[in-house]
Picture (cartoon, rainbow, N blue to C red):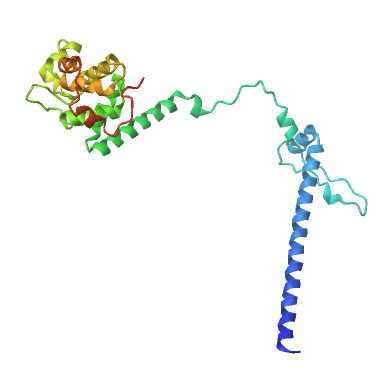
Length: 265
């Protein structure tokens, strides 16, 4: 026998061996599937009380089978197995029963925790974005939410007005983070002092209330409201009365890249 013939014979034997192994595996899988199906059919046909009795009492000896019968196809139920219910019984359950209460949908503590985590997530994002301390970012964020304006607009306004300096003072006399004039601030809080306007919380509270009122007064025209905030209502009204544009670039700087409406409602 030549070398090519020997190689062909070896390849044929290897091929036959692989086919035999594949057939054996298929037969094993088919047998396991059939055995599992018979077990399931056996359990579905057994009454529930018999299974419960079997699980609580000592297992009885299996009945003697006739010679040649397939006794392995109907094994005795195990003692430690729980009561099994068929899918039909599960689907026939009472649909009027109350649905199970899930913690994430009903527990107010989890909801409050989620809102707190979401709040701090935004605060730290603004802190990193504008490179300010988290405490100042928290004060700006909370004041904006309380006043009903979008926090992003609040941060933009404070950055342009005071560069996040609570003690900022302008030559015209504007004070604090939002650069409020004392006369304007006293419209909202008549007894507010100059020293109080240099504290972050008081200044942000009044400044954001003022901005929110301007946005409402000008029917959602954010740029016009920002111009009135910066130039004052008299100067903007005079320009509009003369048919001129009151724009001075301030509103463009504040709203550059901003796509919000300005308010939360």
